[in-house]
Image 1 (cartoon, helix red, strand yellow):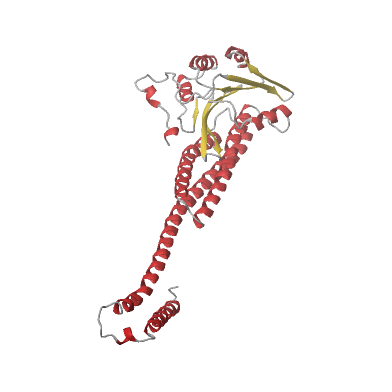
Image 2 (image 1 turned 90 degrees about the horizontal axis):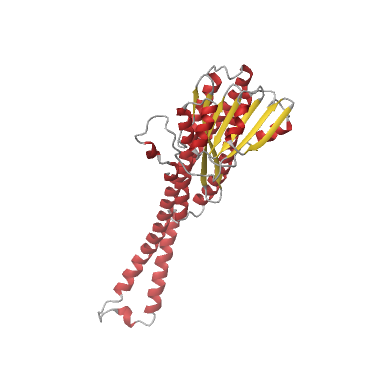
Length: 354
């Protein structure tokens, strides 16, 4: 869990609104992408300087500005100053250890999301914070690095199909939030496959590495729950907050996102119970196998008790023992020991100890 805890000590003692980037520098350069559109027109391009997006603030079209890389504080300060963002909003965007939340600043809505991907090779979650600003004429999105789950939204904008170009800024915000939530299902699907593999290993022949895998998966699910659970409140706030920036017809779509969020949370809780049950199953299986081994060893020891007694009797150094001089004594002793062993095995089977 250490990799999920950012160095918030950088902010210690500084006044509120001080802009300090907290988190990893995941992008060497900042990339600013712009999509400005109407129902009949689309402009898409990469901006070489932050000042190029300033004229789009007051356009009548819908403007989406996506910033990949938030480590350049001066750039973030210029952008925030021009679009009228509160210093506390910029502070939260730069602090990548924020929990998902929604804040209403009257002129715009501020939403924090967690964009999560799953590395199947390393069995680890990769988490990236997404800051979303929904204004009256623009949508700003801030990410820690390039590469996101928004490409299907961009493709829908390019093709101009459906209602995304006609839906307005609130519908664009809904589409971005929906893309993040839908990606959770892909992550859960991969985690579900890992859980199935672990179940087979626990039931079959678990190794010491199996315990480590269970603990790792349990830790990843705990962090996934931490990242998704607060999102329920944020989406509910969008749906029921009564903001003038959210149209009534978009509320229905936000309600659907809320339902998906609840479904994701329920699945996470189910997976956590399954992983916890796997640890109990592993310990129970380990105990059962130990009991089987001890039962076999006990039966072997029990079989040798009478044989040891017979061997001990005939190993005594007394001269007056008639069997010692008897020609068939050796064979008779062997026959007696075999007979005793067979009788004991028959008794064990009759008692169903074998």
